[in-house]
Length: 74
Image (cartoon, rainbow, N blue to C red; front, top):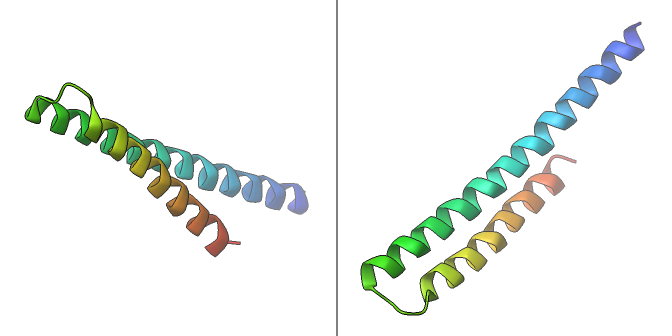
């Protein structure tokens, strides 16, 4: 029973870790995309330059952040 309890806690810890990384990635991408949309709307641009650039930048930042956390916590 002890080993199954430890396995459960280890699995729950891993689930919490990876799901929090996913939510962090979504939040970073969402904030950057929202900022790009607001900038494009504020500047009244015809082509959404800031939306594209900031969204791609947010994806790279989210990947960097997640990979850094993944490597550090191993």
